[in-house]
Amino acid sequence: MTIAIEPVTDPHALAAALSGRMLIDGALVPAVSGRTYAVINPATGQTIATAPFGEAADVEAAVASAAAAQKAWAKLPARRRGALVAECGRLLAGRVEELGRLVALETGKALRTESRGEASVLADVFTFFGGLGSELKGETIPFDPAMLTVTLREPIGVIGAIIPWNAPMMLMAMKIAPALVAGNAVVVKAAEEAPLAVLRVAQVMNTVLPKGVFNLITGFGPECGAPLVAAPAVRKITFTGSVETGRAVYRAAADKLIPVTLELGGKSPMIVMADADLDRAVAGAVAGMRFTRQGQSCTASSRIFVHDSIHDAFVDRLAAAVDRMVMGDPLDERTDIGAIVSKSQHERVCGYIEAGRAAGAGVRACSALPDDPALAGGLFVRPHVFTGLGNDSRLAREEIFGPVCCVIRFRDYEEAIAAANDSDYGLAATLWTRDLKTALDAAHRLEAGFVQVNQNLVVQPSLSYGGIKQSGLGKEASLEAMLEHFTHKKTVILNMT
Ligand code: NAI
Ligand code: MG
Image (cartoon, rainbow, N blue to C red; front, side, top):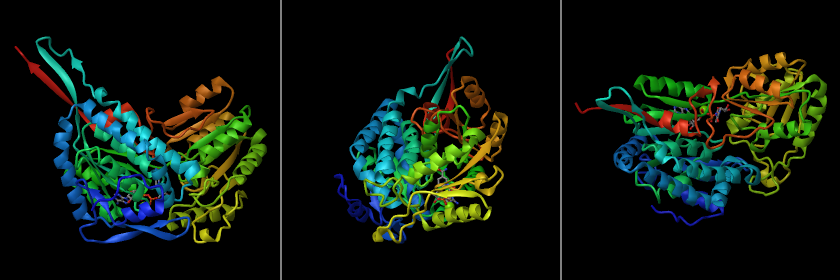
């Protein structure tokens, strides 16, 4: 089956056109079984498309295609592979509107504040990694003057990539761009909630890449994700998602003795010192909590430690700023905050809000639910700012993945550092101060993979990104990530004596 490749900015039409297909061996195909499941617009509850319910037979076909294609792909000069990946970036950059609208429709993330941005970053990730082909260098080693001893960076083979729904295109790009440039072929398992925009990306990229180098399959974790991890030809798994599923993936990979990269959750602290620029810190909390993404971010600054002397003013200003944000139709340009991705996530988030209220915490419910009757069936949640909860409370310990944060009062710096580090997670952390000495001290002591002072940026192509503790294993987004996680080093000795 062929689907027009011209940009389609009506996301409903595009969703319908992509309905029931995934991409295996260069072709848009249904599941072998013919089974499908519904793809829902979370802002309305309406079905916008179906996606193939992929199972072991589909995984097998995708992995076989990737294994066959990988050999010739790896033989291309590295810069040539990079040029093709960069060309994908160029094509995707021309489709920011199309892809932004489609991902907004299927995930509920607002177009203006989130989805369009995700589509731009997607293109940038391919552009960035596309330029790194010639960096797949080895070393020469002075082992013996009579011999030439070198290391070569070789591709691993077929990579299985399992991705979530919160930023599906961008998180997929962080995995497949370096994997492809390094000479691997990939099979991506889309998140069940968000199979459409990534399929469109795969379709566009397959106009440039050789058939089979990039396959995209859809389906659920146990039926489709697990067989991908178990497939004998898959020699590495890269996963982003929950700690629980990450553990299951790690265990299954251990049986095969294959490496994994895991980007799991977070409970990232933000420490606001008494001397911080309050306006900037409040703006940083709004951005850091990803309220525009309904808080559905692994990096979300969901534990905000604020010095006693400015705590109340900070809470007032934060609540007022979030209150001004407009919740509504993700495709409406006026909307700041969209809908939660699925019923189960909605229930989960509401459960945490109830638990926080039951714990007798102070709470500000901000913004207002949309009053448009067309959105009556939508999965909207008002952002909640909790106060008065300790760092030992459930809301401060567990990843909520919703628009819910805890502002926690502290009196001295040591107390704040200790509380910030008292977490199972270690993905990101920020500190807000004008004092350089405190900034440097905290940068050394905060237990996280990504520490920022006086800003709260998201993951950036070129900067290694990844957590410690329960937040995961390995890094993404950088040259080092490509070298360490998508190649292996072969030592070669040429004895010419
Ligand atoms: P999940 O970790 O279950 O799903 C992520 C991906 O793993 C999906 O593609 C899913 O189909 C796949 N998967 C599930 N079970 C699998 C298995 N046994 N083998 C192989 N693949 C499997 O996450 P879910 O259910 O979407 O969300 C639950 C929670 O996870 C969220 O509330 C949030 O706390 C966290 N999460 C963290 C993300 C991050 O960016 N680190 C992204 C999404 C969720
Ligand atoms: Mg799950």
